[in-house]
Amino acid sequence: MSVQLKLNVDQVSIAILLLDQDEKKELKQRLPALLELEPDELEDMGWLRLAESAFSFWEDPEEDIYNDLIPATESEIEP
Image (cartoon, rainbow, N blue to C red; front, side, top):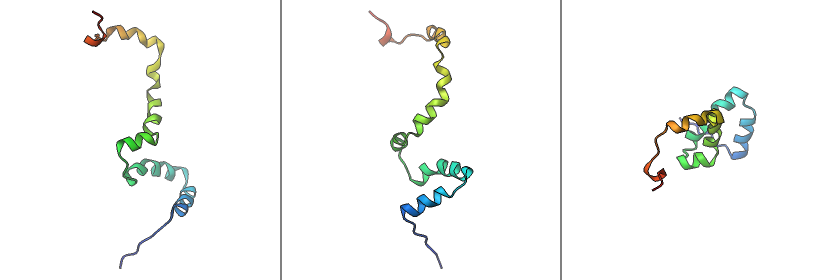
């Protein structure tokens, strides 16, 4: 005997509100897979934008001195 649970969006929303913070974090990690999102849909949801803040330490102006160590590409060289 199988039992199916059918919830509407309002019921799911209320259930999410009842989760504790750790459960909400876990749901947030699982949600893209559960919704079967494509990579571009993930970006639309802002997941990648949120991750970009993890690299903000690279935006240090003092680090610009290392830019001269990167070889120029042909398109950057003026004739």
